[in-house]
Length: 479
Image 1 (cartoon, rainbow, N blue to C red):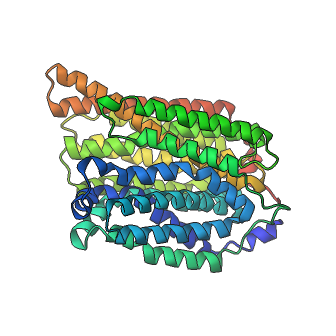
Image 2 (cartoon, rainbow, N blue to C red):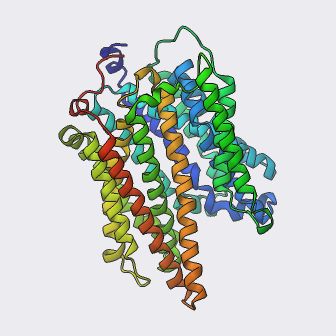
Image 3 (tube, rainbow, N blue to C red):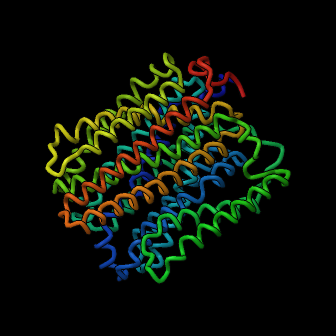
């Protein structure tokens, strides 16, 4: 495909369709948390089973990245994206009309499945619709801002919607948004890769890797383990690992693999994946513990918490949309990525200094501004670095691999950091320390651990990631 074929499809309405779909998925990942009590009362959920409303979505979302990426490579990115949006919209309607816990949990699983496919295709379409690296980082910045901003506002929006018009509308609002995004995607996104000579799909590989990712994601997010069932998580992780090893074996012998193992010959892809796992683990700790600190320690309301997160979102948008495209052409993808990761690490250290009687302007806002800048630099540079050594015809599966790794990194990282914080909090409580102080000490240790993740990620990417400066101006002139 020539440059002109790519350039000719750079239409603003295409980005609107992509961003609207990203908005739906980012909001739905967390908006439901505020509405859980209302949903449980309305549909008759048992208290211990409410967590499945969240876990069903997260397990599917973490499990379908790879198959979604490969479907795009085989059948066309726009087509798979449009179908994914349609399925997500239909699942949202089913959730909004659900009359039983089983129907709602099933709808949430389908939402997560479609959401992972749409997210992979959105990233891939952005990369395919923009040829130059500066244009790509700006377009990726738009999508990242929409995702991050939507996620930050989701808790506040969920509370407003639930209290004013009822919990069902946190799902039903997706129907007109999804319908509009679907219409735009079919009309305005004209880009589709040239069809390969075959249309085969590696069914055995798809089943084993999807099973491994879904089971692995569920094992990580499962929160209702009791002392009588302590063995469940290790057993599930062993099953997931076994399925993954079988998947690797299948991919090494099949003629048309779901994930061509040759893509891992790209050092950049492997390095960016590993660094990205550590970075998303660190960032998951920021959102989780900052929210807890503001609400539990400083006693802020959900509305106030949403306002406090606003500076990070604004700075993230400015850096990703305005400053980032200029920086990437001047300092290069690798340096921009490392600088962003180190900014994240420094911000986390600032958060670790927060006292129980913290002051907003002195103890919270500086870290929010710095981490917003760091994420704005690092997120998009990471994806550009990861895909820099991958053929354009395999952008779909490669972006699926990267996003699957990042999703698992964030989920696993939060689980680790939560355990670290809980362990330290319990130790201080057993020594007679008050609840607020004990919680804050736990948060501080978790922040420092997350900062270490970000520093290690910066070292790995700075030493091993190799993207020539020339690729900061033009990724590839043709396919």
